[in-house]
Amino acid sequence: MAEIPLAPVERIMRRVSMGEGVDRISEAAVVELRDRLERIAEKIARRAAIYAKHAGRKTIHPEDVKLVELDF
Image 1 (tube, rainbow, N blue to C red):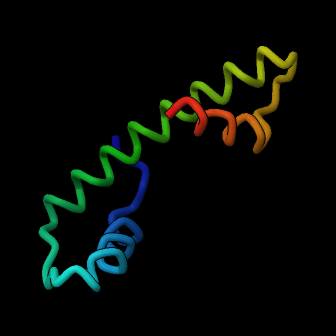
Image 2: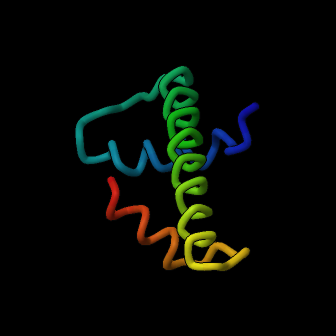
């Protein structure tokens, strides 16, 4: 089930595409990006949890999330 609302995803797409000569964005494209962002966010959260556990913590800290970026 999708948890990220479509409106913010569409705003990001519009902002990014403004200077690229793109006038329209299909709803299907917004849904597709939202779904992919959710999958990526789940992977990041899962890996950040592993880092927190490895550090002996039960709380995910910002540095755990930042460390995940190094893996990408």
